[in-house]
Length: 239
Ligand SMILES: CC(C)(COP(=O)(O)OP(=O)(O)OC[C@H]1O[C@@H](n2cnc3c(N)ncnc32)[C@H](O)[C@@H]1OP(=O)(O)O)[C@@H](O)C(=O)NCCC(=O)NCCS
Image (cartoon, rainbow, N blue to C red; front, side, top):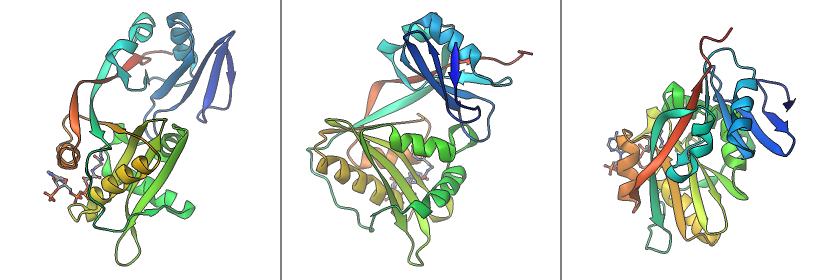
């Protein structure tokens, strides 16, 4: 297994034709996130065991029901269930009631702070994870909302493939929730994806996230029954 990069920075794992990438799950857990670009279950298992974490678990990206066999073969087990939401972008949609702007470079630190405050530890992305979310699609945008005093109160990361938009992240500072910022960010993200020719918007979130679920359903999303699962390989107890 050839490893390139310096952990805890992102690394690539390569054996012959097989290729995977890994990074810490976030800034505060011992877990790693593994993504396979190409390879078999055997490669996947060896790659998961080669990541230089001390304890913790190796976690997969959210996987749809039909794409788990390789992970199962590699010894991973279902770990966390996510609900997927979908919205037709050709259906009528309202404009944001609060201005949403393209975020500035200087706002990333504040976005990471909001992300930390808005999500419980397992789901925090950290700065590297936020940047990865931005880079996950061919085109993407970092959108922000600001208070009357100019403070950044929330952000969204939205991306586009050829005909599908992905709402990768929405978070509002807990000190500023319930003031319409989240709804404005969702609407602006829908508008952004539609203006890039996308016909559908997808996102996923934890099934018990009621504020987000209500907001998405209110903005025309429907919950897709066959959701997504993050699989894990436990590396605790290793010496
Ligand atoms: C979900 C989130 C983005 C909503 O942001 P917000 O600025 O508070 O949302 P808004 O003020 O625009 O509220 C829009 C609607 O969302 C729903 N909602 C928001 N907070 C809610 C809560 N605590 N309980 C129930 N519904 C809620 C309501 O339907 C609300 O409409 P209403 O105020 O007219 O009843 C915010 O709570 C947040 O950042 N949560 C943590 C991060 C997260 O879960 N992100 C999304 C998952 S990836």
